[in-house]
Amino acid sequence: MSNARETEVAILGAGMTEWGKWGKPFVEYGVAAIREAIADAGIDYSDVQFVAGAATVRNGYPGYVAGATFAQAMGWTGVQISTSYAACASGTQAIASARAQILSGAVDVALVVGADTTPKGFLAPSKGERGDDPDWLRFRLLGATNPTYFGLYARRRMDLYGATPEDFAAVKVKNAQMGAMNPRARYKKAFTAEDVANSPVVADPLRLLEICATSDGGAALVLCSKEYAAKKGIANPVKVRGISTVTPTFPNQLIDMPNFATDSAAGVAHVGPSFKDSIAAAAYAEADMGPDDMDLAEVYDLSSALELDWIENIGLCKEGEAEKMLRDGDTALGGKIPVNPSGGLGAFGEAVPAQAIAQVCELTWQLRGQSGDRQVEGAKAGVTANQGLFGHGSSVVCVR
Amino acid sequence: MSKPQVSAKPEWFVHDGEPPHLIGTQCEQSGTYHFPPEYTMSRAPGFADSALTEVQLSRTGTLWSYTNAGYQPPSPYVPVAEPFEPFAIAAVELAEEQMVVLGQVVEGVSADDLQVGMEMELVSAPLFEDDDAVHMVWKWKPVSSGATEGANA
Image (cartoon, rainbow over all chains, first blue to last red; front, side):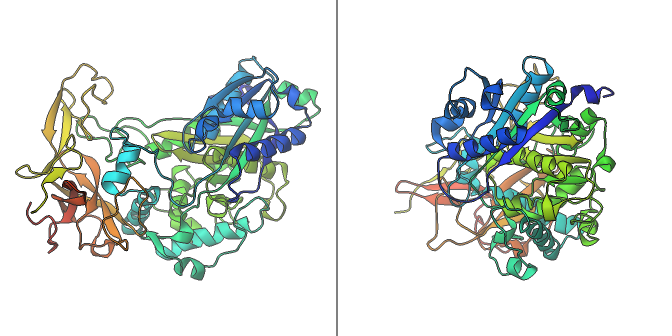
């Protein structure tokens, strides 16, 4: 797209709680993140014309109507709202919803927010006898949890590309080192390879310290038109330049949560990039940029091994070469392209509707040069990548 | 008196077939298969008006990948052993259908016994038991394995 600059919106403010496991109402985390983002933006909440909420399905009705829930918590102002649910990709859909409002000219200032309070242990499906819900059935008929799928991908990397358990542990160690420098991370311990090896196997070959936890947390962004940012005296804001919320193309040949099977390629051959390869590609295309233009990446390391898949999926190297990048230190802080300088999910755990927004918060602080010890020097552009179960792609390209 | 065996998901799996098999549907015009069976409309773009025919899916394939459940999955998984015994889970690629289908691996075969590319076959094996019946499900078994579960298949 040649008009990438015309489709940019500015990020005026970013806010995010520390991630943890406190069991407080999710609204509290969201409100804390909103207040920080509003203050960071230098505006008053009454200036917000649109609230895009990312929903949570684990906190009852208020979670399903997150946009209204946060608008009420902030004090009704008559503000217009939307609520998005796309599993782990919910945050990106909320960002896309806010951007559409701004680019259409309907509003100048929009707030994006997501927050979650999670139960202990595995994420489980909705209760009841739900014999037509694949997410329920996979637990009943297969005993397949989310880590089951991560284990399948990891084992395939080992058998196809020669990845080793030591490689997977090295991803965790790298991200733990970065998380130890991030005050908002839940886990601030610089775990060692030995710590990983001593943790129990959850889904062969992955161990407990390599599977992301479920966390509480909230993240928020204030987005606005570039004109509004200029009016506020922000000459060079961080900008959202590309967003991807793509779905797969038929036939999707990679087994995805919560499915029992892939699509069949017996009748119709798959053409073009795989679903996971198409996710960031769509955001790059919209931004009129490519992986070589990126200075950092925040990817969805639901497991340590999955980060290696993402490195390839977002185009940082060819398929089967991520282990080499990792071993060469290319993805560490100070390397060619640091991946997950926030510490990633390994250091945060997953607060589902907040997570994709949190990725963009990290890009915002990195591109502003506000990331302290974990700062990627001279970062001018970054990409996020994420995927929500049931076929949700999610990627955002930000520039400054 | 032994309890009757029933399929844990009769719409998808025929446990007492000769042999036991998964039920899929095939789009007549494109040839695409669907599992779970799809009856409303072909998912192959452009074949909306094609008829969907019920078919038995292939019972053998090659191991695409595998893992295990090291911890007891949450409900609605029904615990079968106290304390919990880890079990393996396989993703098997069916050659004819060109699709990957998940299933538990039969008892007695662990992740250590598996390797990508192995030949696997589908068998009927107990998933759990309640007061009324033994609920049977499809499981994957290495063709070369000496595992006894599902040996009746």
